[in-house]
Amino acid sequence: MHTGAVNADVLGAGYETRTLPLGGGDLSATLVRRRARPATRGAVLYVHGFADYFFQTHVAEHFTARGFDFYALDLRAYGRSLKAGQTANFVTDLAEHFEEIDAAVRVIREEDGHRHLVVMGHSTGGLITTLWAHERRADGLFDALVLNSPWLDLAEPWITRTVGTAVIRAVGRIAPKLVLKKGLGPVYGQSIHSDHHGEWDFDTTWKPIEAFPVLAGWLRAVRRGHATVHRGLDVSVPVLLLRSARSHLHAKKWTPEAMSADTVLDVEHMRRWAPKIGSRVTVVQVENGLHDLFLSAEPVRDRALAEVDEFLDSI
Image (tube, rainbow, N blue to C red):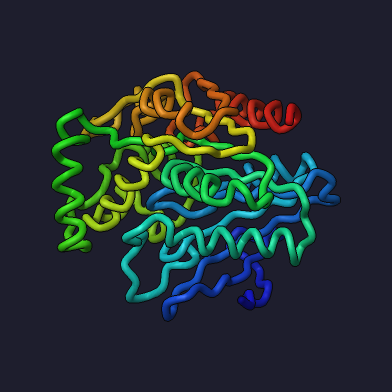
């Protein structure tokens, strides 16, 4: 596989991108890089969530200041990798994304020469990287896994998680692009975007305020991934799972409570399923955290990043 040329990124000075061609027609992923001066501690590879892309420059700068080259992957049909005519954020098997993670790791290790690698995943990216880490556990490719509010179960009532999942699996197989939900609602997007109640300016064509439609085949893939986690994995490296202290789910409209809770996922699911990831999992609860803990209010995100620093210093 030949990666594309290195180009300047939309994030500005210090950020570079390269295209990672993938099998299957016009598919590609995008690897964003910010170098440390010097990279004394290796590299961090960040994988975003659903209806998302990498824009969190303060996270990159946090880790480069600590001696890590920082890389972020925009998965196929997400963000920088989304091409005209593609169905946004759509796969029918989460393992399809292993191809771009593998490609990114090859660049980091073989081309850029890093021997030490920390993989970091947020939300759906936390689920994908967890499944990838289990599949690649014997390959010696990475040294730690950091999960920022990983999606380990459906944030719905029991009946939806059981009977509803059986329906999703059947429908997703027959009609994979059937729209199950038009989006995820506005609450979380309004909590983080600077046009509303948040601090962050991001491209809403790549990360819409109400997210992208939830398609049956994609949700079937997610539920199959959840089931794999629930049966138990064997991620062999140290794992840090960060979660908010509480969830505030199913609100139709923004309220101030949305600024100090996970409004997307059930944090109790993260606590429940964390031990299934491996035998070396540390769970840390972050008070007043948003779904993306690194986009929380400054004292909260500083605490979350400090927890990552302490974890990486300990391994």
